[in-house]
Image (cartoon, rainbow, N blue to C red; front, side, top):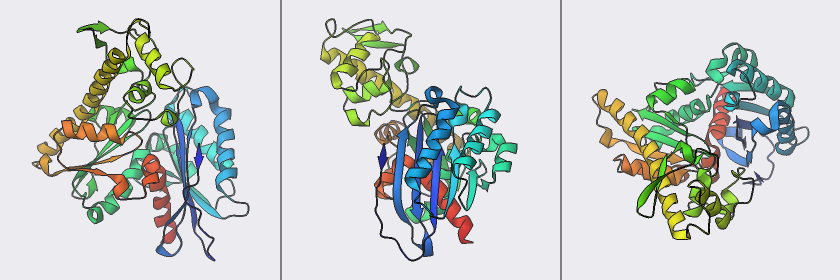
Length: 371
């Protein structure tokens, strides 16, 4: 789904920068004009791209398509890229994934003035460096966000905070202490261990990855270990999202109407709409949502305990929520005991929230070329 969020009249001088966040399920892009200390968002793109279905060739074609759609002919531009798609099982190992994504990007945007890749030490590196030190760029979209938050934390009054970005598939948590990103994990595996990555989102997560039973008729029914329903069905039933916001494929390949979502969720207990009524199905959805909130609040509690171990009072910390799953992040923050919750839409342009790492990458490149 392409969306041009701003149509800016061309200025006599421009500094065009494109930020890309190449994920395994979504590709996000932001194009800015950063000439003369003034940043204008020219366009925002967020498109569902299941690389495990489209494959390597599909990614190469998609990047070329994005190049044609977002860059005007003869336009000079810089590009900064972060990625998480290397984890996809279309690649046997991450090294293979990083190399393919880097080379595909270099080919698709070969006319760019400069192309850089975000690394886990919050720096921009060349394509050769990215391939050589592949684990530093693998899954490093969080590092772009962390870099940006460090630079704006005092200005925004979030110098002691935890940033929670919930997307369609995963949740990223970044602790900011005295204006510095104090992460303990630098790879996906490390982040899963320390509570800075939770593999749950608001669309693609399988219901069986959240619960093993649900309440039915005053009892608990164990659920089928099948891909009968996704959490997107849960959030659609609870009206946390609209049908148009359910942008991924569904478990059964059918549509995203309320009735179809209820049919899918009923199936996880071997039921259907003739066996269960809509109120029962809605209560199932509510329970699953509560358990998903618990997953994220548990990670927040883990980070709270880390902050406390530094002899710092976690109660002074705010939680900054971002991404398409901000509503879930807010609920989790409340359960974890945080009193002040800041919607990033109140700090930056609202359309940036769902593509924050891509936007942050543009700002990293802006600083680099402005030196």
